[in-house]
Image 1 (spheres, rainbow, N blue to C red):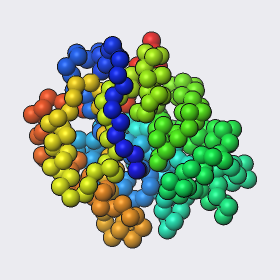
Image 2: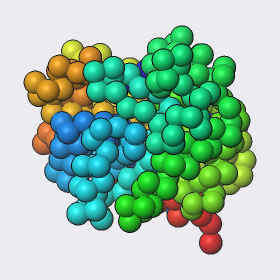
Image 3: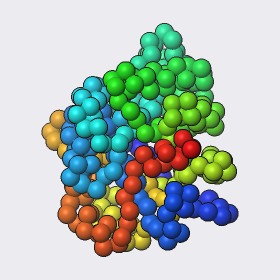
Image 4: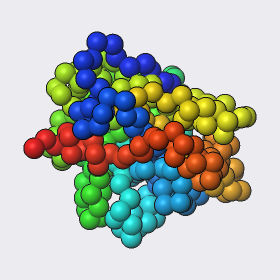
Length: 294
């Protein structure tokens, strides 16, 4: 959440879409449902948004109470591509989650009460100021291994509420882990994006969208206009669907954002506009193959 769009780096001679084998004028869009596993109403909405809507993939939060259910849903749907939403913060005190690693092994990731920090500006700043990289690696590996232990195969790594990890060394660590496990990484901020491009690896060419940056009122019309205006190259939307039911409303201040995302992603209008605009919706399997190399 709370991430904003950034413009494409200047000076790139070849777009990532071309690195993936598409013509220069192709318009590619990844529609990735973040926060899968946070709670049941999100899980249900994500599955529907992928199976019956325009979403193309999702990102699984292993530390949350709904993770076990989400993994069962994925195990029955091997056709759904998913990444790991690496999680070091918790914004829901009424449905708390914690590190998969024992708290005594990752004290630098915890607040004075022994809990994960809230992703407020102050909470993020404190976390990033004190978090030890070796403890971050322990927790990231625990989250990745939890997926492997469930017999599931992810496509990529991305971050919950910490854009590109929040620190250069965290992003560098994540790139190393991705190479080790054969995964791609969502990278959308500079200078990290250009550094990855310099390696010949595809990352988004244009503005990155976090749906929490959009107003709820008039969102469907805004989404339609964004599809109409989608530029050539590789684009990504991080969306956050939820059913927005009574249980969601009781614990999640962002439920209206999530409900309006769900309504658009599963609407006939969304699919119709994609077809009219000749937009290719892809997922991270395509990116992953390029990151793995020959």
